[in-house]
Image 1 (spheres, helix red, strand yellow):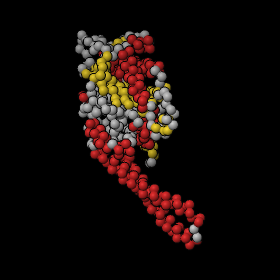
Image 2 (cartoon, helix red, strand yellow):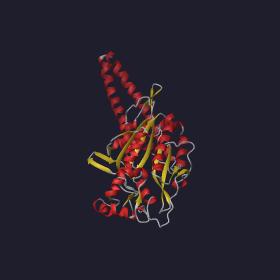
Image 3 (cartoon, rainbow, N blue to C red):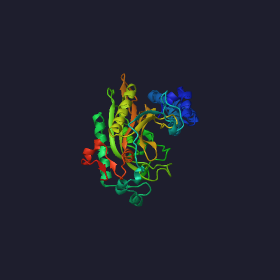
Image 4 (cartoon, one colour):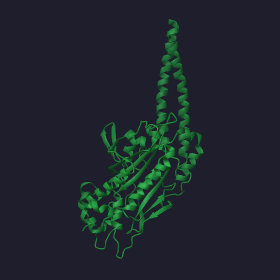
Length: 422
């Protein structure tokens, strides 16, 4: 979440931020108004609490008659304090709701735009593959049709369900294992994490309220709900909730390889064929905590990891900087990596690299030591790979006879085979 004190001191800056994101600038005004009301009510409550504290100090010095009168007054004061405390708790709930509507401040140089079509291209890698035959979408390739079963997936799960078997399941496993080794070589610590998180953690991390309708809710009992993770980012960052991580002389680098779950709300009719957009998928996430002054260094490290992965695979891909109208609420800066899909003749996002500044850690109450005092570190979140990368390989490396050339770096782990489907 944002620092409400900073918003109160810089209201116009936050209204400008909301405007350039295409959001309602009144969200900042609402948060500021609620903060002023809460602050005023808290100040009045503090005065009453001080009066009660003074009474407790002097009660022993009063005569019996004075004590009886004072106790009567104090009973009324205690009742008023309780009423004001209840009211203040309600005001705090409303304040936090309004704060949650205000996104992170983006950096000064962010490109201004309305959607992903306004994201400027930063760099392009590899040669665009040329074909002397009519290319097919990945889901029309023989190897895909043999090893990916969407029909049975839909029968046992529902829309966007699927089974992956045989060579394709092995290919995904090999790809992810290979990516993991690259990440480990760059100093990221592997973690095994929960796939369900409680409501408090999902709220603190910024996923609740669920404005995008992406989360799967798992009722446990009448009073308790869990949520399936949409990314291991929530679990990785949740691990550091309410922890102090020391002086952070070196950034904390962590990663997890998990199954993830998303409703894909708002995507009805999009990518109905194939498994580009599904409810359950595998993902490797790399996250970091660092001092604010180390943010650019860690951001560059994440970029290096992504670029190494996709370059070594031999893919044609590019990096785009996410503009003001497309960047998530939590992010201060974001760069997406997009792979070329020949059949569509366009690039599609396969991973992203983002800095959330102190937006996540403030709500999580994750702290570090800065000049002898506690402060909030910056967090960075980066997708290393999902099987969208595998789908890009299927399309870019397809052959006329329906097979798929296996990237050279993966061939040793596929038993020396050079093609999927041979």
